[in-house]
Length: 241
Image (cartoon, rainbow, N blue to C red; front, side, top):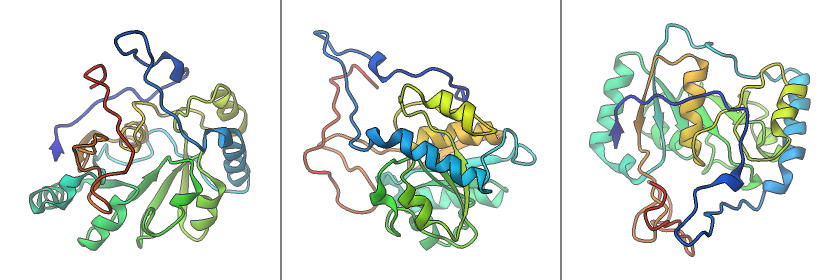
């Protein structure tokens, strides 16, 4: 799926997951990540790497306000027409920000992935099937990521960015421990954060591809791996689009 250019706010100073929209009847839509208890540890570890020389992203560091194609690993990425459309944008000089598994998919199609993006706090993504080490790819990794991911990528070019986690003290940690503290928001998906980061870093416009991931029992979730995730259903009965 190719979407029209998207504009989203990139500056986030306050976030509260408890303010999530409510379903009919008053119950809240709750997102739970089993790794959320590690956010403070993870952020402090990233800060140590930053102090040792690992750089943090900078506002407007992309030259010439380029178009950025943010690519997710939704099932439409299996379609030849989508791959062909991405090539059209790349041929005009667009950069690619590929999210997690999309790095390997695009590499296998012959693309040079400019930036690989991940915000997942779990150690399980420190693996080739999750974050592929494609030649020439810079890895844009959230400061809240598990130390195992930074260790896995120790021989790659890694750039730290800040992704909103909902941890109550995260903004204070970013302000205290990093020279760049601006935090990326916009939804709970890595694609949203990649869009925010692209605009923050200086993209002139963003085009979306493979971003049709649907956490619904009746829909495919990813272009690779199992068609469905057992036991997962994020249906909200129309309360959240």
